Length: 141
Image (cartoon, rainbow, N blue to C red; front, side, top):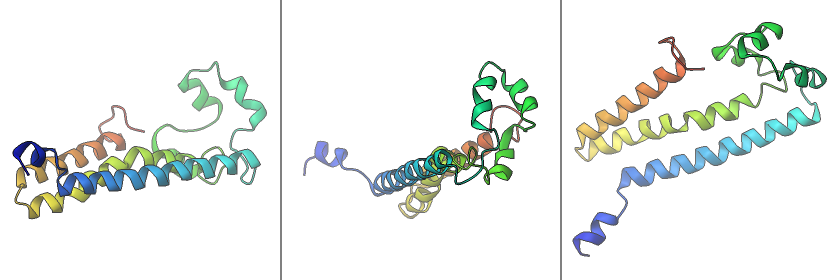
């Protein structure tokens, strides 16, 4: 195998990352579809009745949250018992699967003595986690 062919080969951490990303994406997508069917069939009562939804479309986020008596951020976790909030579980999984991928490759990189890359992967996971948490007060959920 010449140098070009060798350089084009996927490394173990790349394969692990891709495998986790693929499985996480498929599981998240299936979860979104299943929870959407739960919403459509009415198996779980929605927090916002379907007939009221079009009346909310013109509202700003702040007005919508106030009108519906909801809170921004991770407050949806307490509302997953409603048909219109259960789908957030799959969406959160899809959004967070990259963090799982980065954490999974840290030990592989460490064992390969790529300690700098292992540190970068760990820092990336931490940064993404902190950004999603909203604890810095900017962005997040």
